[in-house]
Image (cartoon, rainbow, N blue to C red; front, side, top):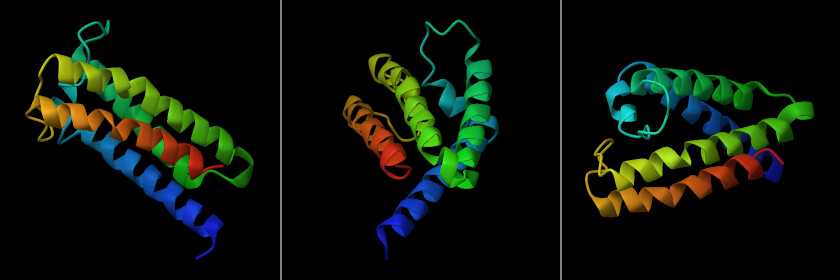
Length: 127
């Protein structure tokens, strides 16, 4: 498989994953996502989850549907989204909030290492 085809598949998979996560924010995983909202966020936790879910659906859709002209820009925006939600993952660890099977400090800590991988995935699949 050509490198460009691999990147296209990776970009679309990332986009579909974001759409799925966004749907989870709005429906079946809404309570669990609230565990990741830091206490310092000035909105209600549920509102934050809803707004971030809408953002993830929009970002995922942009990754799936983008054309060649905007692909790199969309990748950078997606990477920024992953950086932006990282404090929520840290908050989940520091506040010992269990969600998504992350019911120990070790699991919550290990999860932090996946966020840079998502940033890399967003950038490499769109460059």
